[in-house]
Image (cartoon, rainbow, N blue to C red; front, side, top):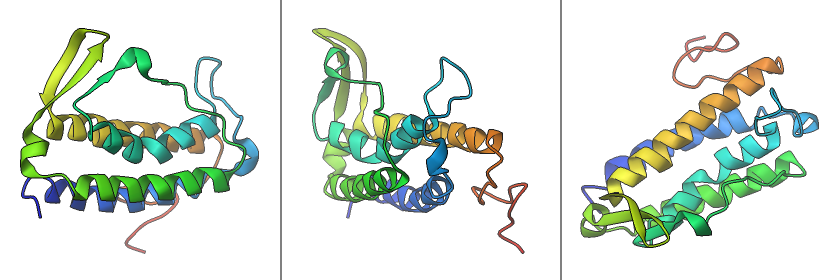
Length: 168
């Protein structure tokens, strides 16, 4: 048990269930749809939401990331099953990676680099909060807007949506 990571893991588990409800609503026949020419497709965005926890938790196993070595363009998935499978693996990976992190590792500095230049330094726990969780929630919210634009009924996220209520 880690006093630093355990509360984050508890939050992650709750949010993972919420994210699954949103991903389950993605209409497979609309994966190529985009709300704007500059936007990711629905499939790319859903894929990104699905893999954030596993990808970020893997990054945190290292001391830094050189952004010149990263690919920030999500692939275009072929099916909803591909997205859900990626999500389930991502959640398992995040659970394992975070569950094995010690307090000392969580508090150690992590660096975002551009080759040899340090762009940002923060404790791993800060990167975990801002990029794995907050970034995840941001894109999940974006995905809910895509779904609304496609007339897909939205599930409960933090409270009632216009389509469902946890109190009914």
